[in-house]
Length: 133
Ligand SMILES: [Zn+2]
Image 1 (tube, rainbow, N blue to C red):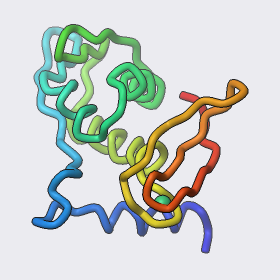
Image 2: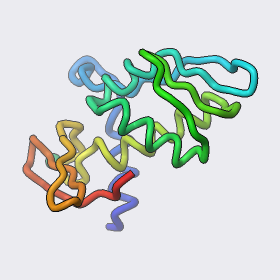
Image 3: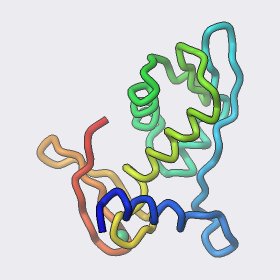
């Protein structure tokens, strides 16, 4: 099976349910302010994925081709972007940086070794290189 397909399958397995409600992909909430987009629950979104806000923010800036800032609990994006587009990128982030590609569990952490980034699974021990954001 191709790597991409594995990830595709992995994501489908992550649905909130009674057994796994500790892992939830929260949708972004926000509004447009002038020519900017304000995500008001950004810290909670990153917290649900157990990732650093600044890492997720960097990924979003890059994949949405915008600049921006973290402002307290909020993320400000320097252009108007629909929440649908942002949520798609968050899902992409989860596939790349949160889910283990072997066992599909979200019990992973990002580690940096010799200036390379790896995703390490705490459940099955798999360690795979990931692209730096
Ligand atoms: Zn694993």
